[in-house]
Image (cartoon, rainbow, N blue to C red; front, side, top):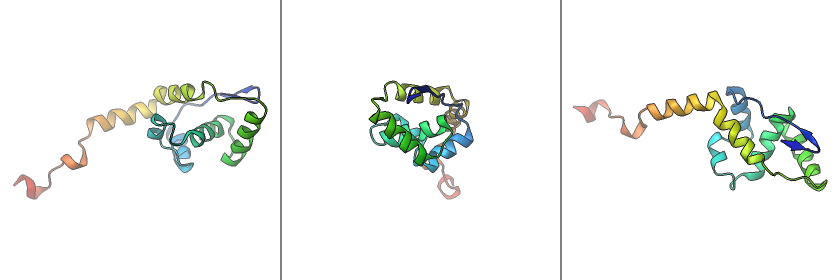
Length: 111
């Protein structure tokens, strides 16, 4: 992510980072629909990449835009970080293997 002329890297998404994203109102599944929370997604990931608080990231991103910066390529970089995340891949494998709750039969249904 290029912010105010400096390059920042999104770190490997692990449990701690995913939890921080959720604290800021972003789940990994929100990223697939970025139009709903576009600025929240950008700010949350910028905050993590810059290792700063979300409020500081808000201010820095505002200055970035006012100074003529843009968000070109940011969503692609965020999506790549999610796709490359071992934690996210493991979660997806687990969810694909598990039985949906609505498909689980109670003891009375199976008798």
